[in-house]
Image 1 (cartoon, rainbow, N blue to C red):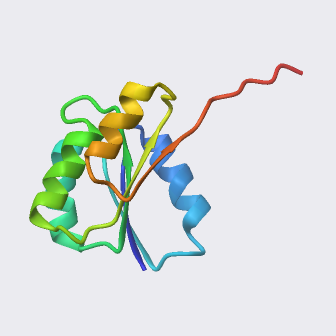
Image 2: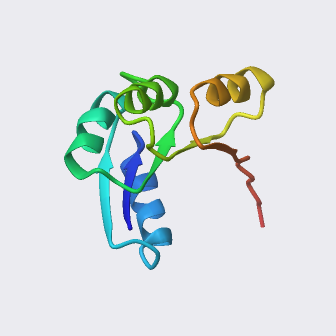
Length: 108
């Protein structure tokens, strides 16, 4: 299985890559939604993990661009926002799924 990780934080891309490395054969990465369509075209991944907030082009716009050219693309939008407006925008992008997470800090 091929995976494309689109996230503007190198450390996050590397972390995701390590977490899923046993489940995929090939991992491609790019650092902004503006690069996502070209990266998708180049590697034709089975799945895309897309960050929602990036500098040049956000993940929702990038997902729409990919799905316009590749309607069968499977995109998972990963975001840290739990508000209804962001969830609705992600849903309207026609991604496969939108996964939210909350950052939790534990001081010991």
